[in-house]
Image 1 (cartoon, rainbow, N blue to C red):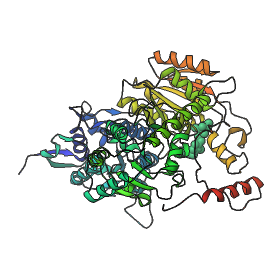
Image 2 (cartoon, protein in one colour):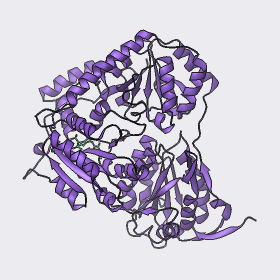
Image 3 (cartoon, helix red, strand yellow):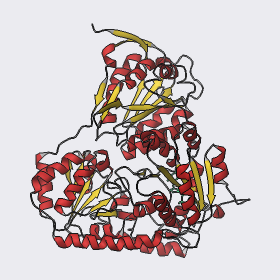
Image 4 (cartoon, rainbow, N blue to C red):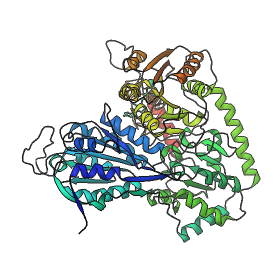
Length: 615
Ligand SMILES: Cc1ncc(C[n+]2csc(CCOP(=O)(O)OP(=O)(O)O)c2C)c(N)n1
Ligand SMILES: [Mg+2]
C-alpha cells in the first residue's frame, strides 16, 4: 500500500493545486498564480481554512466582486498565453452565480479558469440552507448548475475521494490547447470539511508543458496543395498564434512565402504593427488594406481563429469564387468551420509542417506589391483620424494621444463599447501579447479587473486600461483592489455620457435615439457623474482632462505615479472611424412604422446577398 495522508477534501484540493507546476523559459514556476476568494457560507470554513494552510505556496487574493475576480483570473491566464492560471472560490448562491458571465467569457475565449464555488450539503440534513435554490422536481439541482453550459468540465464533489479523479480531469482540460476553458468543481460544503486518507503520490509535484499536436498527413497534403495553387494567399492570425507562441514562426513563414497577414482582435500583436506584411485588423473593424486583400484572396489560411462574425464580415468578406479556407487550429471544431480544409494542429507545429513542404513556393511579387501599397494608404487614413483637432475628441483621437504618450511598449487592455473596433483598427501594437482585447464575449466590466490580472501576470509591464463610461459604471470596484495590492494600472475613461456604440448601431439600423445615451433615457435629472471623484474615493490618483493635449500631459505624469491612476476625458458619442471596416449582420425589422427602419431594411436585404454559407 502506498503511504497516505489524512486531510480534508479542501486541504487535499489546495495542496494539490500548490504542487502543479509549469515551465517557462527553462524555469519551473507554480502553474496556479493564486486563488481569488470571497468567503461566505459554503467556503469560509472548508476551503478558507485549507487556503490558509498553503498561503506561502499558493497565495489567496481578496477582491470585491466574484465576477471581477474571475475576470482577473482569466486575464492572468490570457496574459500568460495560457501557460499559467488562477482559481476562484466563492460562497454558495449569489457568490457562485456571480461567476456565470465570467465563465461564459472564458468559455468563448478558450481560456483556462478554475472555478471552485461552494455548494449545498451533500448529506442534505440542514436543507434548505441559506441561499439554497430548491427545485421542486429535481433534488440534485443547485445554483451551481447554471455554470454547467459555460464550463468545459463540470463536477460536483459529494464525497471526499471524488476530488482525485475530478482534479485529474480538471487538469487535462485546463492544460489542453483544444479543450481549454473553464472548469467548475462545485464543492459541497460538508464534503469540503470531511477527511479522507489520500495517497501521498497524489501530491507529487507535476510539471505541465503545452501539448503541440502535429498535423495529420492527409490534411497536410490538402493544405499544401491549396497553398501551392494559390496566387492571392492571405493569413488570418487569431489568438491561437499567441497562445501557441508561434509569432516568430509566423513571421518567418509569411516573409518566406510572401503572404500578407491580417489580425483578429484576439490575434493582434502577432506581428509588430510596422512589419511590412502586417496589414492590420481584418473584417468588420478591419483596415482597408486587410479587407481589400481578403476580398480578393483565393486561399485564406486561418491560424488559431474561431472565425467569428467580426472576422469574416458575417461571412460576406471573402468574395473570390474559388476562395478556399484552410483552418489551422488545435480544435477540430474550429478547423473545419465553414467547410474549411481542416489542418488540426498546434499553430506553431502546423506552420512548421507547412513550411517543410512548401519548398520555394511564393506568392507573385505583384500580390505583395498590392499589399504594401494598400498598407500605405491605410496608414494615411489612420493618421488622419488619430491626429488631434479642436473639436470634442473622438475615441480615435484619444487612442492617438495614448499611443503618443506611452507608445507600443505599453500593454493595452480593453473589452467593450466603441473602443474595441477603434483600437483594432488604430492601435499600433508592439510585442506579442501587448494588445489584450477581450472581444470574444466583449464583456462590459472586464477591463479594470482584467487589467489587474494582466498586471499580476506581468508586473513590469506598463498596463493601460481603456474603457467607456458605461463599462466603468458596470464594474469598477477592482480599482480598490489594484491600489490595495500595489498593482499599478493607468485607466483612461472615455466619458461620452452613455452607450455610444449601441446608439450609433441603433441609428444605423433606422432606430430612434432611444435608451442608450443618458440624455435619451427616461430621467428626472440628467446624471453628471464625477468619475474622477469616484476613482479618487477608492484610492486612485484621479485626473479629469479637458483636451487631447491635457490628456497627453496627464498620461506622461501618470507614468510616474506609483499607484493606479484614472484619467477621465469627455468624448463625442457620435464619431467612429469610417475608414476601413466591413458590413456586419445585425438584423433589421422587416416591418416598422418608422420610414428610417424600412429604408435600413431595404439596404439590409441588399447586403445580405453578399453572404454565403459555402464558398
Ligand atoms: C455586460 C454587457 N452588457 C451589455 C453589453 C452590450 N453593449 C456593448 S457595448 C455597450 C455600451 C458600452 O458603453 P460604454 O462603455 O460607455 O462605451 P461606448 O459605447 O460609449 O464607447 C453595450 C450596452 C455588453 N457588451 N456587455
Ligand atoms: Mg460611453
